[in-house]
Length: 163
Image 1 (cartoon, rainbow, N blue to C red):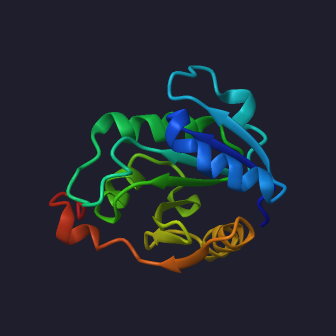
Image 2: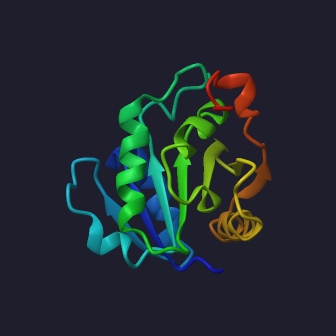
Image 3: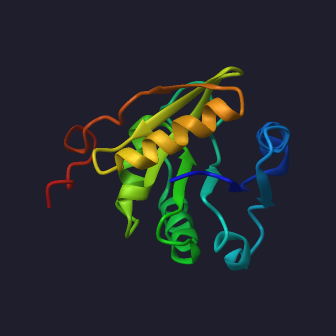
């Protein structure tokens, strides 16, 4: 699994630095604004879809993502190829809630720019090892040191996770 084409979805101001890094590293980059209602064409060619969710830039991780964010990821996933990676800039304690809305949670992980030089990878237990490694390599290729911070167990965060 290798990453060559990246779709970045989110606010253009927040996406600008990431778009620039990816372009300088030689990746094909497509930016989708949150208002783009028909992303199917771009998503069908993506190896990695990085979604910048609202609140990602907040220093504390207390902000919870709402159902609309999970629904948005689910809608994007429907247009992605089966092998594409779906990465969401989300607090680690929100990754399980987001993954529950997906049909392919093995292709999902949370990501966070922890500093200008460090990419935090936030896999859930279902995240496939190849997804984690491909995303780590992608991070290195755009000049970031990628480190793992597994998402907290869903049983301690989501009372209905065992249902």
